[in-house]
Each structure stands twice: as C-alpha cells, then as structure tokens.
Amino acid sequence: MKIFIPPVGFHPLFGMGSLFAIAWNSFILLWTVGVMLTPLPGNIPLALISLPFWGASFLMGNTVLFALFLGIHPPREWGLGAVGGVWGV
Image (cartoon, rainbow, N blue to C red; front, side, top):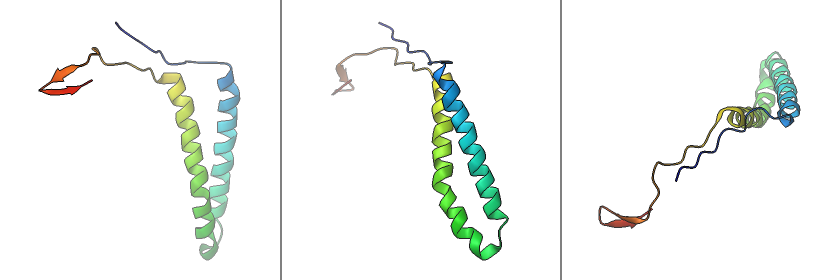
C-alpha cells in the first residue's frame, strides 16, 4: 500500500497569511535598522528585544514555504516483525 500526501500548494488563505508575513517582516526589518542606527549604548538592549520577533518571522516564513513545497513521502514498506532479532516497526 502506498500513501502519498502532496503539498497543500497554493490556497486562497495563503494570500492573507503571506501579506501579513510580508508586512510583519517589513516592520521588523525597519525596527531593527532603526535600532542599529541609534547610539551604541542604547541600541544593544533594543536589538536584543527584536530577536524573538525575528524568530516569529522565521516561523511564519517556514509555515508558508512548507505548505507550498513540502510533500510527505512515507517509507516504502510498513510492517511489524523481528529485525535483527529485535521486535520493532
């Protein structure tokens, strides 16, 4: 038996999600550039504050890209039996 789960591909809901991701990343980039242009003693804590937001940006980008391009390919064979004397799947 073969099971193939294709990638979701383009879906109308990706339009809103993609627009939000673009707006979010643009704002975070603008924020980070603005922080880096401030004088040195004050910009380090503000730059550290932006790190979790960059993490959220990375996760949003991965969500969109994985939904568009990632397909799930299961192993070729499934079975339950002794492999090398050890029971496993």
